[in-house]
Length: 270
Ligand SMILES: C[S@@+](CC[C@H](N)C(=O)[O-])C[C@H]1O[C@@H](n2cnc3c(N)ncnc32)[C@H](O)[C@@H]1O
Image (cartoon, rainbow, N blue to C red; front, side, top):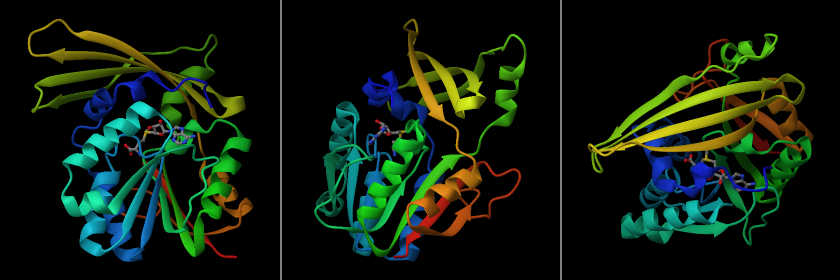
């Protein structure tokens, strides 16, 4: 893991701008929990509560509690603010904790642990990955489920890294507008794929435009582990899980050659 958190996590409101209109994953997880009917749910690496608070709203309707665990204090603080803006029933259903998904031990176990939005890509070494999977296992009841959501490797974007010399092209990868604050965020990205480490070394460059003021420019470097489906399966198997399902997108379609996501659900079987 990098020693200092990615700069974007110290700017939770910019993180929200990156996710304007992203509701597919939230709907997926709400509907999954509707089917699984848990009593206690943990979201690992819950960030600023973008998914956590809607999960707590679902918990208030359907009768389950939610815990959000997050490493970076700025993100956790923003999650607490979001919690204060939720319905009082959801506020009561939700608790937030500062901690590391590799080592955190809950006082009471969970029926379901989820980790949306490729958060496990922050785990760069096999040791860190195994630690996080084992920690999820320890925090589950027997029969409990661990659901991991990551984007599929973008082989096309990595192709330029195999040229000699390697090339890093700048692409515009997001352009969002937030009505409430009248703010437009344009995000540019360069990618260098380090095949021997299965790592994407990404530079995110941001221009933020508020009304007619000159843009505010910022940068966030991101070292991202690139998971492949078999490896994901092996991580579950090695840590005692049985792989129950793998979805290829937020519409619960099976994993296939053009799937944008891989969402693995493992069951604690022993
Ligand atoms: C892409 S964000 C996802 C946040 C949230 N789950 C969402 O869907 O919006 C990844 C989050 O993982 C957190 N994180 C990274 N490493 C972590 C660790 N070892 N333990 C807990 N959280 C971690 C980051 O601080 C960040 O908030």
